[in-house]
Length: 627
Image (cartoon, rainbow, N blue to C red; front, side):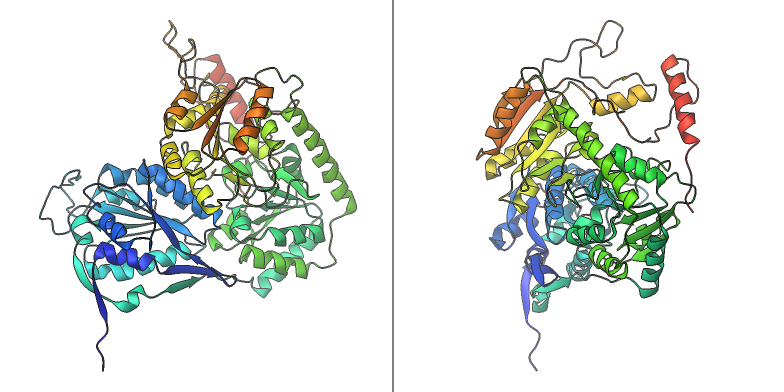
């Protein structure tokens, strides 16, 4: 009998070789599970993973980043654009390089998007102890700063011996490919172990396919769901990010066409239906449309598909106000399908919607209901037109007019990226999503600094689609460094840099909650010590240009339109810089269609806080616990 063949490699070399042979498969289509590896090198990984990537050649492509958090954001943007079927790895040194991963890891796990993190770690042998950048914990010798990644990782392991890599790597791939379990996966790699050689079994490097199935709903649960839908007079469906992850948009459209049930969307689910589909009523919740939120308040059945019901969606448990409202949740994760005391339908979103549509054959909501929400949808579109409109093109635009100028330019192929500030609210209410994956809002973690690196990741996943990163000045100052990466790699995207001299979103929230916009403006100190002086003389456009971007300045609506058109046709990373006027989000409409619970000081001496608390108490009285 022949002895099993082995290959002598370092741990780092073995891991890189293993990753190059991992695949996912869904619906008969195969994808590389780990497409590339981002990396910044230091003493914790330069001679381990760094050397292994160099030696591997093109087996696992290397991407050079500038900031560890940003590398994770880029990888997450890539994974989302790939419907979680393909992901990327990120390697860092020990110490600050590793801890810089924590925010990106939290973002990935909150949004349930796969990314593989490979931080270096302290010596497993303890021969160099304490090593440079080591955190010493007197009461626990086996703790390193990488343990900060445990609570924000869906799977965490520290590979302290070569042979431990095999089960750790297999478990890591299982979690990354699992649509229920996926998120950030961390394999902490002690720097001495990375460089240690071992005789690896050849089968460890064989092609391995992780098949992603589409679980169908249980027959009895499906029957319960059908009864709930047939008995409802005013049902409303909420499309979450799971619709996109499952590629269930066609199934959702067929369901809406068959039943006439209106479809609202979360930030992650927007675009599940085209904006001009008769059943699409727009965003729901605190940043939702008047149409969707009015329907939610009167709905007797709420059908959640692929949503986890964050407080923005439920308006902090105040939105679904009908006395007898019930919930039906279709979700691949049992944890989410049982929320709000719902009738639970645990299944893949596409498989579940297809099964529901077949079982509801011949059922349709009342014509009066369709007519009513259709009229409300048309009225909302008129209000969007008013918000987007700019009667005088010679003036400085408002933020909504910036969106209007972009809306008039794009087609189905464009992708719009945003994450934080006041833009998510305006986009959720106003943006007219034309195709699947056009609307890329990271709002699970709403992380400032996400947009620029995410645009790079999205562009890597969709190289033929125009990509727009919409960035406020506050977000830009958090994390502009990956502009250099885009320039270096020739990754073409357009950044629309909106300058409003501060944190506009939090400024508005501060005003509503009695904080009087304290600490939210980018201005010089006034004589009273507050930041209410003149705007700071910073030039963010010049900064973007200094990092290698082509910059187009737009001072008026007319100049903005021309700048956006020029940028869309550019063949290099381009920034459109525009200063905006403050204006109502939607003329004639309140800024928020539904409440959001941000606790207000229960006792205060300043009149603004006292008034805000009275308003807060009025809203909290409407909260309810759905059981």
